[in-house]
Image 1: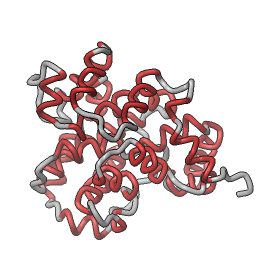
Image 2: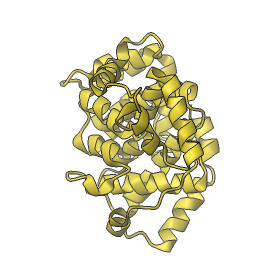
Image 3: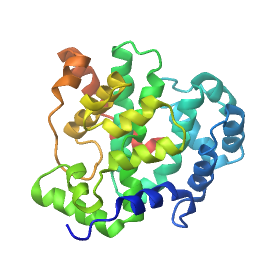
Amino acid sequence: MSDKIDIRTLRGNVESINALPTVPSTLRRISVMMEKPSIGLDELGRLISNDPALTVRILKMINSAAYGFPGRISSVSHATMLLGLSVIKGLLIGVSVFELMEKTMIGLWEHSLGCTVVTRMIAQKKGLKEPEEVSVCGLLHDIGKAVLMLQYAEAYDKAMQKAEKDGINIHEAEIDYFMVNHAEVGHWLVQKWHFPMNLVETIRYHHHPNLSKQSPMETAIVHVADVLVRAKGVGYPGDLVVPAVHPAAWEMLNLSDNDIGDILRNLEDAASFARETI
């Protein structure tokens, strides 16, 4: 298309998200803080504790089914000590971008929360040591969609219309308007925010898990979670397509029929869970 957005301009606009007046003030503050390479748990804890609304959102998330600590975490300091820097950073971005998601694409938050639940379950079934970190990957995998919608609402709306009309995945339609898809956009952001490589790779390659070199297991988990949540119809990810699971990801995870049944049963309440969490 002749009206494609220049990729360098696009990346510059995406990476300067904290300068946008349309971005919620909490997300602007957090974005600036995330750009500090040496940020620590104490500093993040103070930021959360000084914002009562943010404190409530964080504690609701941690005490939800997504993180497996129902009703057990009563303070931010306890949460930061228990979950660690990567998880707290991810939760901060996740809950602060909630408002942004709700304004830009109705249903994207529910889809993201559904993926949070499923990624954690799969990570536990595969015996990963830090299932909470993988659940953050599920929470943030589509953050690029919210940012593109915020920056380029008209173009993104056209991309969604194209996806619906042509019966294709939104990440394919995005290429026609932005030259890149939301996965690459999300990757730019979390890289700038100094997130760990497993989060960077899962966001970048969740549609093409075979390309992940450093975090193939985590990327496969997010990829399969995304497909399962789509198949279950939880939320709205920008299109109505339920893609096939990549064979390499399916083979790597080797989930049994009982595993899949268990996961899908737990997704039954994901929509109401998403609405109640924030």
